[in-house]
Every structure is written in structure tokens, then in C-alpha cells.
Length: 62
Picture 1 (tube, one colour):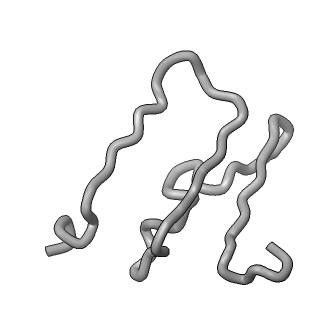
Picture 2 (cartoon, helix red, strand yellow):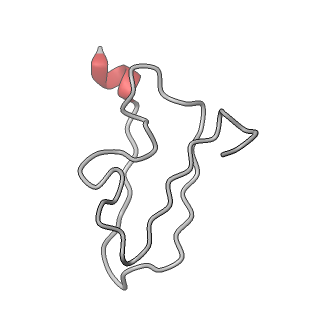
Picture 3 (cartoon, helix red, strand yellow):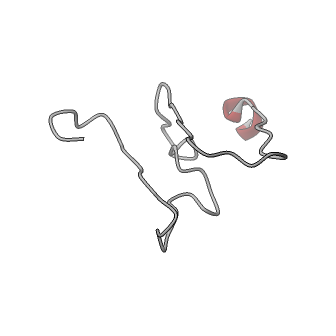
């Protein structure tokens, strides 16, 4: 985002050929040094599914 180098914006729409994070985490939480926090804003959701699970990756690495 212009003027905010610490913000990583991902924008897709129905005609996007590629969805960033389609097969992995788009919020770069998989990086060796993940960000302090992330936010995801969705405008259109499926009626079922989409459950999100959380795990402590520092404990998983140990």
C-alpha cells in the first residue's frame, strides 16, 4: 500500500486468474518470521465450509 510499506495488500475479484495463497497462506504466516498480525476481509462467502483452525507454529516447529 502506497505510503505504508508494512501493509501487504492482496486483492482479487471474480475475474482474477490467480488467487494469492490459493494453495498456501496468503497472509504470509508461513514465513520464517511471520508478521505480528494479519487481517482478512471477505465480501462474499460460501454458505457452508470455510472453517479456520489455529495452531501455534512455534510449538509445532519444536
